[in-house]
Image (cartoon, rainbow, N blue to C red; front, top):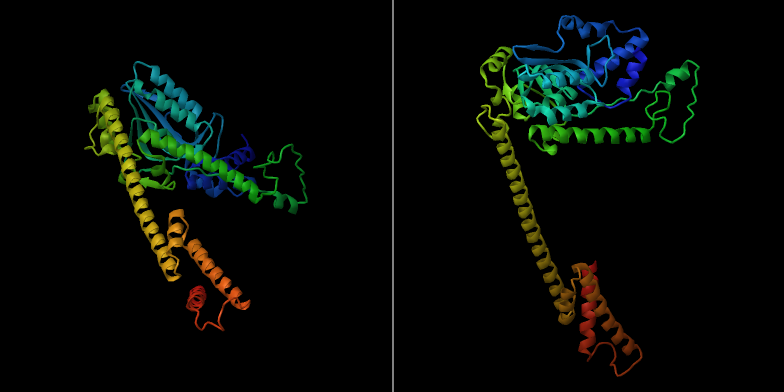
Length: 416
């Protein structure tokens, strides 16, 4: 695959990669196109991978290295790092799964992740078939993003003190070379059917609307990633998402629920030699246990207990929230009723106040109606006084008229 095709594949599709690895690959490939790439070849240090074996069986254990960038299919290459395909890893895994001479399968990780395409299906395949024999993950020295997705599907994840895990998230890039082409005097007119057909095309100007569509795709993939890791590790999707695609080293990865036990390579080899195969399934550290390995049945029992505990916590939290809301409502209702009663008393219309309380009117609506009623009374007497119907001059001798006008005056002062 040529560098331009590989660059387009890396930048123009969502990737499950550590940010540093994504930057290395994309920067290297851009550099290749501009002939400024020597610094990235130095960073790659490919010599350390030249003598590394592919999948092999040793002393009854099937070893599958997961090294460098991860791709959906074979026949991809990048000068800046080795590339391993899900296709080849799955083939090795299936062969070892059916091989009676292989008593346990071990994935050895040193990868910053790779393509989203093909990753989740492979992880679910491991998770669905792993109970045929123990499947273990040893992080030597990195398992980020897509690589961690694979590790999470194993029965146990072992990590040295200096190794890293996590980066559970999605990253995508969008290359726009329209200005570069325009500066060179080249204009490419894309002819498409469908408003979104040209999305992710480097010769199409990048817009906010296209970015929003890409972000929606990234978010959708990320949600699926959180859910899958949560299922594999006995966590919740919210707990995984709250990590914000962070990376964790050694003990921190165990505390975050991403790994199970801290072991150097020598300790891990000793573990393989001295541990019974049936004890290599899941240990209860994530469920508050001591950290010793347990059988599959004990693991399932611990997982069921944890799920029941989470349900109980959720029900308790809901009941507490409901009780708090009821208290808030009761206090608000008491304030409403007292406010209406006081306003009605001030305006001398207790009967109407009771009616408004019973109707459920808000305090503000009730005050408006009470003031309006008081104003209507004032208007009636004022109208009768203007027509000289049995009314003395002014307010002298008319106590009712004086009272109504006093109420109206208080109403105006309260509004002010």
